[in-house]
Structure formats: structure tokens, C-alpha cells
Amino acid sequence: MSAATVLEDTSALSRTDLWFFRVESVLNLASGIAIFLLVLLATINILGRWLFSSPISGYVDWVEQGMAFIAFLGIAYTQRVGGHIRMDIVVGQLRGRFLWVTELISTSLMLIITVILICGSYLHFWRAYSIGDSSLDINLPTWPAKLVVPVALTILAFRLILQIWGYCRAIRDGAERPVAVPLIQSAQEVAAGEAETVSSQRDRGANE
Image (cartoon, rainbow, N blue to C red):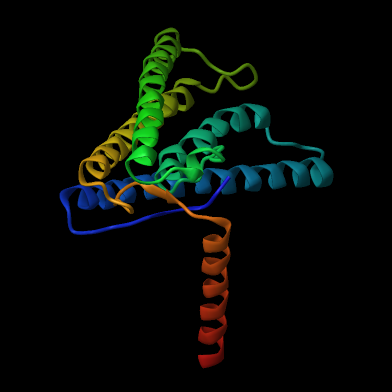
């Protein structure tokens, strides 16, 4: 797995990418809040069981529903910044149009799979909503958590479409470093970036 960076310019593609990134960032923040709430819930449950012999009723049900928010709300954000695990031993050796054609093919396949998953997950949500499906312990409705999946995957599909646009533009222009797509960084570039970040933090702390 390698780190990635996304370049910007004044083009319509880049402006759309930046606007959509704000939406993805909000969803990613919501995912982080869900993680915090589940950790808080677990802490209260443990303390309640330990101090008062009274755990939270339906704790497992709440955790099961919350997992969908944690797992899916940040998926498009991670795709935008190139954070998903990928094997780039071969792809990392490609350059120019050969690289962008390869990325275009893989991203297009991802889009096809994502659209199929959107259809299936939406039908799964609609079935749960129609029959009033609920959890076993406290009868918590399951449809909100199941709705999160097709919504998050739809956001991911739009992100993939933007990246396909970026790769097509890169192929057309023969660009070495196109905008709105994750550019994989080498280990040396990652190390240099981390060193620069640490150095700037030290300088800022010294000035304060």
C-alpha cells in the first residue's frame, strides 16, 4: 500500500472534485462521530455493568446498527485520497498514458461493481423497510442502517465517475500529474512529506 496525493487547478473538473470532496469530508466526519459514540456507549456499558450491575439494554443491537455508519460513510472519502489498500507492484512501474489507461480500466470495473451493489443493497433496505424488520433484543428498526449502504455507495459511484473523467482527461492530454485523481507516492516521497510535516510543526512550536 502506498500513500497518495490529489492535485488541484482551476479547471471545471478540479472545482467539481473540491466541491464533492466537501460532501465526502462531512460523511467521513459523521463516520468518525459514529465511532466516538460507539466507544462512549461501550464505556458506559462496561461501567454500568461493573458499578451498578446494569448494562445498557440492547447494547449489541446498537453496535450492530452503528457498524454500517462506521464501515460505509467514509468509503468515498478514502477513495478520493487513495487510502484503500491496493497492490501496485506492477502498476507502480507504469508511466504516462499506459498508467492512466490501466487506472481507467480498474476504476471503470469498480464503478460497475459499485452500481450492482447499489441495486442489491437498496433492495435489501426496501425489503427491511417494507416488512418492518427490527433487531432481536430491543426491536430497533434496521432500515436506517441498511439505507446508509446504498447512499454511501452512490456517493462512491459519483466519486468514481469523477476519477474516470480525470483519467480520460489525462489520457487525452498525456499529462504526467493530472488533477482530481489520487497520485501514488513512492516510499521516498512519503518519507520526505512526513519529515517536512514534523519539521514545520517543530518550527511552529519554537516560534510559539
